[in-house]
Image 1 (cartoon, rainbow, N blue to C red):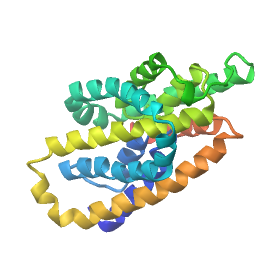
Image 2: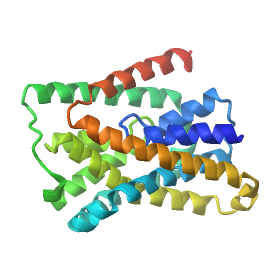
Image 3: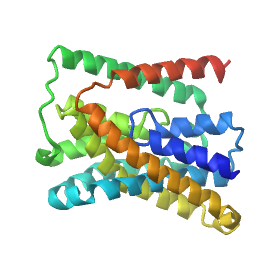
Image 4: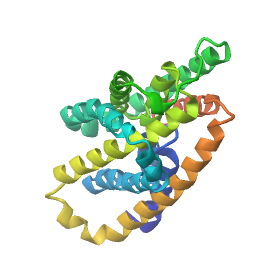
Length: 260
């Protein structure tokens, strides 16, 4: 992989990881458009640069979590279902789900449609967004974790599916987004650790690609930091409708271009 490709993918990861549009889908699509071969290193790279995005969350929210330590137990409970599903389905996720553009396209479309229905329900006061994550129950934390486990399907979006679940539980949009950021920390660290373990025999051969990994990591950190700040401000006065439009439009493009 070239340094330029590493830079491009790092930027894409940083922008898409915490928006409800699926970073995995965008990385897979970008790799296809850039004609990057899906080698073991490429798959490792896509997981590794997620750590840069996670560093952005730690940079922005460590002080907040330290002030609300009760969230740590809830984040751990929410993390467990995804950890179990990811461990059990690891080979299927990597070798089947990630190779299926039809599955990615359908996931993008389906979640986009759900966004529209959610925003319609909110506009008619069928769903009242009034809850805060500081008052989350352990039961809610478990339900959110079970919902997040659906994000093992590429195109669903971990941030997107968590926000859907929390909005259904009447949490405010920005509160749902923040919790999805915090929940990403153990989720992505665990996924990266599992990939490191699975790729341990191949890591020795990645030495010549250290610079590519470093560029991808750094650009993911910078762009994720900027994106998180923007997204939190955006949600204070806007709905998720624009992301619904984007997901549906992207799904249609994938159906007509990649699947023809």
